[in-house]
Image 1 (cartoon, rainbow over the protein chains, first blue to last red):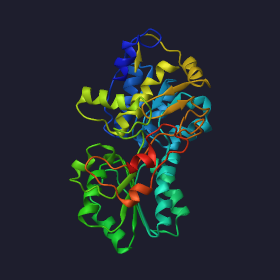
Image 2: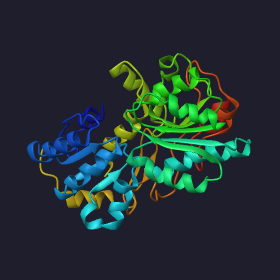
Image 3: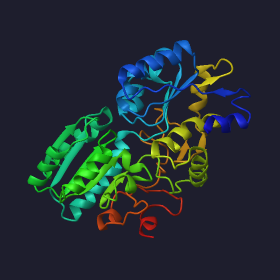
Image 4: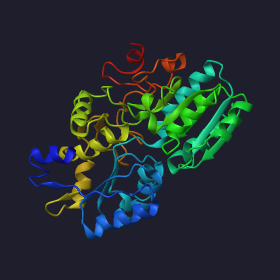
Length: 275
Length: 88
């Protein structure tokens, strides 16, 4: 949609934009190979994308070495979006991002913790996926809320069974479950939390829950789940452009987009005609 | 992304770093990429942040906790967002 819009408006500096797409399969080796193909076989000018932080950490040095623009549209690890650029600006100055980094996502999620503590939800369980973007959050919260966190663990991004973890949440009498995942456990964790009748509110970050059909996907088991999001949820007008985009997207693809396919990626491309 | 012609990357960086860039997108407003190129988290000029989280979606009722939590709307001057929207 973005490429078509740019080209329909005359392209960039009068030149047509061509998109070349590869699926990195959420695998660091695939990401490395795809990045090298883009850089040296396809000879692209700009690389956009990367929704997973562990992949952009691998790919960023390759793009920087080739002195091409990297416009990150989802991965939020401060390593790529902040720390490397600050540490070595000359090498990494070609990196830009249109998404938040973990520090800000963490702030939004922390609102839930603060509210919960005010409401006397004193015992917190912290279940966080083993992914680069979560590292600052896990480390900081573990220290900051050490008094309240009575159970914490990191789980694989491919995990889909949380019965052991949820049993711990229950046995530790946690009332607040901070569950943070961008991986495959999003939908299963909500269903399992509901089916096990875990007596803790489920709050955090769950990419699956950004699907406008999440209630239907989980058979309504989302009741009581609250989460933060990046890029907004279809139907909520963050800017005057949001609503039109959601409807246009639905016309083209037959369904509303999840957060990462909406503004985060779309904006990363559409910002180009602005420069 | 490939352009029909060679892009001078250094010029692009310089252009992206200009201070008067103002892009209103689908998920927020970028008021210039800052010196570390992270418009929202690392020093986005006014932190006029993106919208909401934790909102009830279709077919889902609102819980008391949901209604009270997880809103990041500081300095968000777009109407219809945040707590008020959640309570409609």
